[in-house]
Image (cartoon, rainbow, N blue to C red; front, side, top):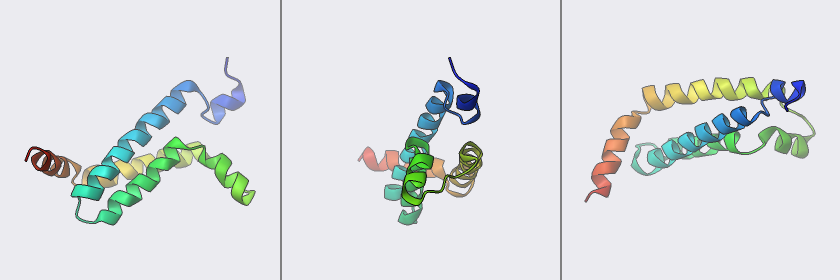
Length: 106
């Protein structure tokens, strides 16, 4: 049974599952962009952003700095929208996937 605090902070099983799935998708996109993208740094940037969805980032930041990031769930949602916009709109992900397929089939 989840408490009200767990629901508010996104600690439910569904929230964790969505976070891990999205993090995995961003990690895969980062790998594709690192090896088949024009700016390699963009792919590395996506890989680093994917860790926001894997790790308990708020706990790590609080442990290192003593400061907790308020609204981490909202921050992750806004960051997810930004990542989707950049990857699908600006990053030409589907063209890079085709390049990857051609390269791997050689």
